[in-house]
Image 1 (cartoon, rainbow, N blue to C red):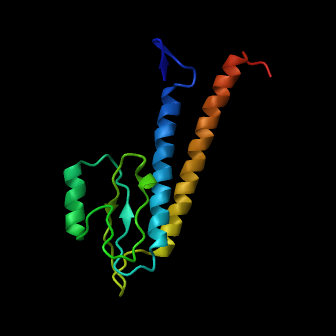
Image 2: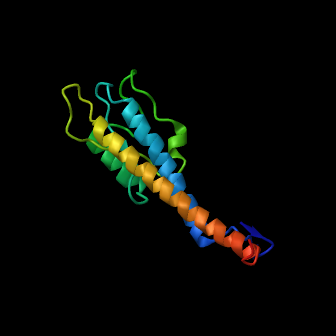
Image 3: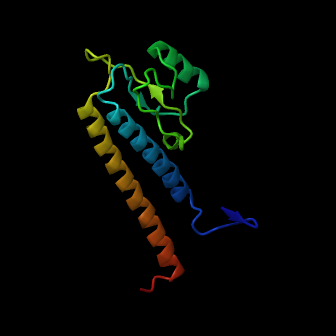
Length: 145
């Protein structure tokens, strides 16, 4: 955030990067929870956030290959993807994996492991942001306790 051409003290490249990464971690957490909530829904296809910033054409092509349209349910019993899961600007893409007999592609154990990994990633980002803020606070106080 710039004020009259000056950078605010909290507007550092590190904090900006951490903010973006934390936003993506929150969006991924919501999407993983959405997948887990549909673990027993017949014909549900797992969604994941893409690694990079995909082009709309690539997202559409992967959706067509999977036989689904992103962010739509294919059965009235599916739980719709919450709009807040898209807060990072990345569009979730379907991830067809080996299906179970009911056509569902969710592996609950894998989803729980991904949730745990995402929680660790978020905690690390929070520590980085905290260290950056503590450094700024220390600079403001000129190193005095």
